[in-house]
Length: 188
Length: 219
Image (tube, rainbow over all chains, first blue to last red):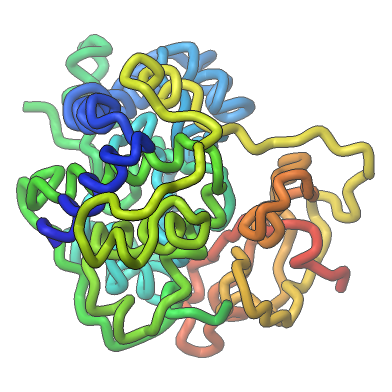
């Protein structure tokens, strides 16, 4: 595939259809600027600030944009709040829809048939494979991203974190906890 | 289309395999595949739905044996061929051989930041009122379009509950065919796992899909 991709780039650049500097800039953007630290900041602020959490519930797109995260594959955001007895899990069975603006590019497992096929029919076992064991009575709400709405899970705040500031809280938020396939870290 | 991409509920793919400390890219060509796909899309000649269709409309044996970015490159070649920007002769030579039409625009480096931060919003104001309301019971229609659709097979014919309304959104089935003007009301519909999967469904689980109005009928 390396040769095939290089040939395609040679053709497109040679024809003046693609600016290689733009390709470099796109790669650099997703390698360095857009990633799950964005989402972690959203979650930490939601934990600290009840009015921000309320804004996330009513207009996640605007609330998240207020922190500077917007745009491609995050144009229309929805926040899903985990709670006692409710756990949210996000998937895209048809392709690989994922909230790039807050989580960056999706990991390979998220884009692959095992997760895409099983998250909807067997979510409890899929979660178990990630080490997420829920009480039997906890409801699992699965969200299949079939349109241009992008879902961000707001996990529950870990216990004994009342004295932490927003930055310390954000450090506890894992990427997987914002997909639903993980929990936040316990405080160190 | 009832294509290889529509995998919800299918079996036999094995366990999920998360990779510890997964790198963002597994090879340099994957980076170029990402950048080229977005940059070529920046010419403005096809929509996200048309590119999705170019990726999913392939033989199942090809789809399942291709890695993610392989599917992107194959899809991009298909789009470029269909729109006349490249030819089979170009691909065979691995360099430009034939002339190509002038694109609407070329994505320049200085426009990348805006492209990323603005994206392509696809909500649309509709004058028509929505046919359904929150709390309505609806059935996902039993439809089998030959081309692009975003109604997964596992939901077709199944009854669910409207839990959210989102106003008008560009209709992907038409958008994939180049008609960017068609828009419909979009809803989130909740299906009980038992409705979708029968006795194999987890009794304490629901699955939500986002569905355009024409995917749904009243119950």
